[in-house]
Image (cartoon, rainbow over all chains, first blue to last red; front, side):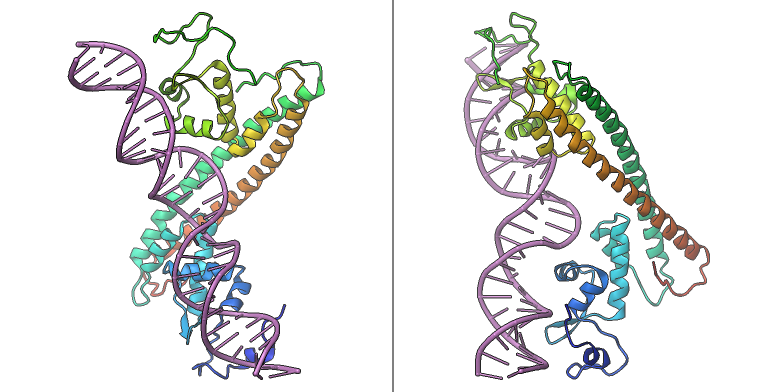
Length: 153
Length: 153
DNA sequence: TGCGCCATTTACGTTTACGTCAATTCTATA
DNA sequence: TATAGAATTGACGTAAACGTAAATGGCGCA
């Protein structure tokens, strides 16, 4: 599953306007590197989360895009919506202390943490309830004598 | 599936008691009693999970429907899809030992239990990751000296 | 020069479990 | 009888995160 003859692409690019040591990646490379699909990358762009450069129409992702993508994936991992992630990232200002961004992130994180803990409690409940039902069912299967399958909560 | 025995609402519009101890409920009553919306009850019916009788066009829920609804709600609580619940309930046979139903239920339950445990693990991961990020952010907010908000996982 | 692969844009489809009208009819009560 | 309150069906909307074509274009290579 090779895409491009590795050495040439890695060494340089003959076509693009790339002169510094920028390691730009195209969409396929990005997808592979971060375990997402092309569709996902375009989708994130469509939602304003990524802004790759273009060489003609071809997307070229810089390390900035890669950092953002990492953040997005981290955010999704901890359960933030893309909207939340965007909202937080939009506050990023390379010239300031980003206090507002950090406050927002902390605020959202606290709420998300609460949600996660609640979810965990629900899941624990479900697990207990389910385990209980399962042993009941096992009982019924064990004693094949029971004529009725009465079900109660 | 037999539903109606004989005694049916003749002309009396005063529900709640027909002749036998049938305690039929209308949709509003059901919704209140089980904490669901009217829409939900109609939706379940549309999906073949409930089959209330009709008095004209008015739905009348018997205790059988109530038992089924309890099952549905239990199923949803432990994370089964409505499709799963239906599949299991459709196997119910009041004349047999319901071995097949029980086996299916057990099978599905085992899988669902595994899913729940996996989910729990994911949530625990997320909680840890999030907690870590949060203390990092708190750090950065504490030392207002940091000029850059570098973010890494 | 044509094949094959990669990429692009646009747009509709998927999943689940309902919510939200809207228009209308039925029922209960004053 | 008039009217408020229930109930009905039908249809469209929602959320999230993409999937899945379809039609098209560019590039390298044999």
